[in-house]
Image (tube, rainbow, N blue to C red; front, side, top):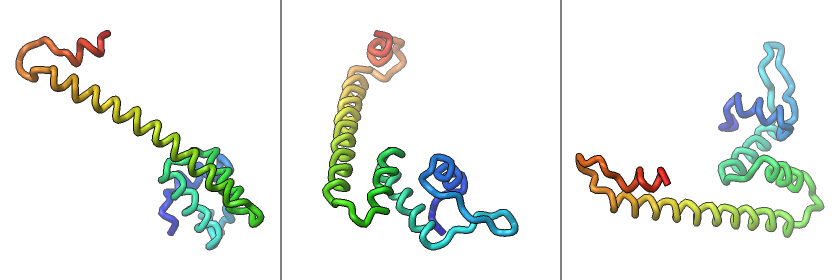
Length: 120
C-alpha cells in the first residue's frame, strides 16, 4: 500500500511524523488516502537522507499552503551541502584504504601496513 513497513509506521506514529491511525474492529490500522500519501512523503524524504527533524520541517511546510518555496529550497540545499561533505569524507576514506591496500603485499607474510596504520 504505502511501501512502508508496519514497524516503521509505528515508529513514525511514536515520534509524531504520522498521526495515530484509526483502528478497525480487528485492531488493524486503517489509513485513508491522505495518510498513505503522507507515509509515502516521509519514506521518500528518508530515502533522500533527510533527518527526522528535517522531515518534520518538510511536513510542516507541505501542510502550510502559505509557505514560501524559498524555505523548502533552503532546506534542500542545506541537506545537499551536508551530503556533499559526507561524500568528500567517504572519498577520502576510500582513497586512504586503496593506498594502504596498495602498500600491502597480500601474501603469506605477517607484516601488514594496513594493520600498522590502524594500530597507530
